[in-house]
Length: 96
Image (cartoon, rainbow, N blue to C red; front, side, top):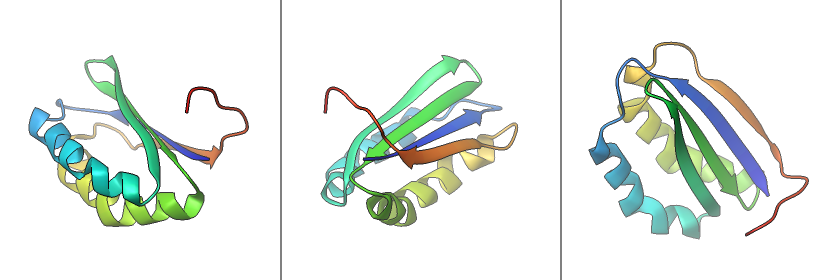
């Protein structure tokens, strides 16, 4: 499994409508290899996005078709600093 983790420091919150958009597109993302997706609020101005995919290729496809456009519309305009991103193969996992 391939995992992507983004730290986003925000100047304003992501609107609920942006989360609704992702929810509506989840079946499509699931078909393309997304296994799980969370956005964790660690502070009022800091969220962590965690996405787990079947493979790096699935991550590329979902990111290109859905994730990157969503980020450009809903997250990037609200960033107060550059995104910190980590990606890699999961070497141990429970609960999937």
